[in-house]
Image (cartoon, rainbow, N blue to C red; front, side, top):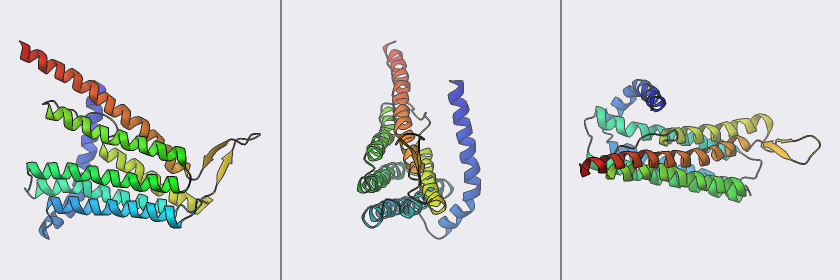
Length: 244
C-alpha cells in the first residue's frame, strides 16, 4: 500500500511539474477559442495521422527503412501532448463537464486503437509476425486497463492504480518508435547482432521498437489484473458494509 502511495505521489508531482510548463500554452489556446472537446478531436486526428504513417510505411517502405517508424513516434508524442492538454484546458478555462469527461475517455480509446491498428499493419506488412501478435496483446491490455477502471468506478469504487496507465503507454511507444528511427540513421535499419558460433539473432535495429511492445504487452495486462484485484477488495468491503 505504501509503495502504491509513493508511486502515485511521484506520478502526481511529475504531472504537476509538466502542467507548470504547459500552462502558458494552455492559456493561449483558451484565449483563441479552443474548447476541451476541440483539443480532444485534434489529438484524435493526430493519431489517425500516426496510423497513416505506419500504413504508408508498410505499403511503401522496406524492412530496412525505419524512417516511417521514427516519424510515427514523433507524432505519437505530439498527439499525446493533446491528451494532457484537453483536461487542463477544461480546468483552467472553467469548461469542465460530465459529458466532456465521457467524450474525452471515449475518443482516447478510439485514438489508441487506431494507433495500434497502424502498428500492427506495419509489423505484419514487414513480416514481424511475433511482434504483431505482441502489439495486439498490448492493445488488449491497454483497453482492459481502461475498461477495468471504468467498470469499477461505475460500481462505485475508485480504481486508478497500476504502472501502465495511458500517459506511460504513450511515452513508451512514442519514445521507442522515435529512437528506433533515429538509431536506424546511425547504424542502419538492417543492423543485426548474431550470437557467436550460432545463427541465433539476439538483436536488430527494429528491436528498439518491438522489445518495448513486448514489455507493454506484459505490463498492461498485469496492470489490468492488479486493478481487478484491487476492485475486488473494495467491492467486497462495500458489500460487507451494506450487509451490516
